[in-house]
Amino acid sequence: MLECDHALATPELRTAGIDRVDTMLWHQGETDDAGATMVKDPRLTTLADYEAAFRRLRAALARQPWWDDETRFIAGELIRDGWLSARNDFYFAGALNGRYDAVASSEGLGHVGDAAHFDGQALQTMGERMFDAWVTLEKSR
Image (cartoon, rainbow, N blue to C red; front, side, top):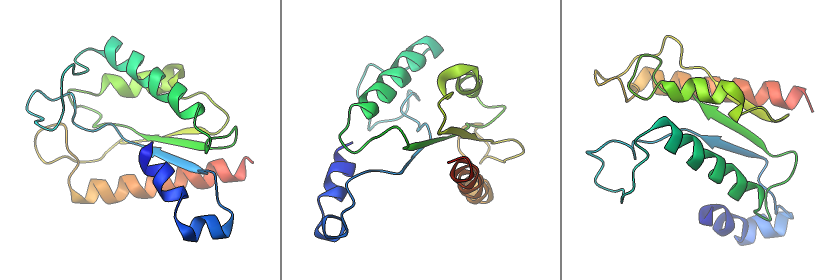
């Protein structure tokens, strides 16, 4: 969230009168992996922990001065057959049910062999799917 504060404080955006974030893209990182060295404990090792943390994230975003009722939130699914794929069900089970929420599907996307990280083509396709989700949300405005 500090990155958004910093970006919105740049002279270019202040001069342009931009003080809100119109779209937030979310894709779960590897912070839950026991081998992720850049993350401090506690890790989100259970789906229940993840769900609680995700709800806290969404509540924290909603409290930011640059967030408003029309800010779009687009989440990318994780690898469909991967070890974190239960989180995809959570997104569709009501975690992302706002008027301007969307989920970009990972159906058919490949990984680098670890069932956790997309390969290069999959990353490109996920970006395209997130853009398509954004276009759909824009049409609904």
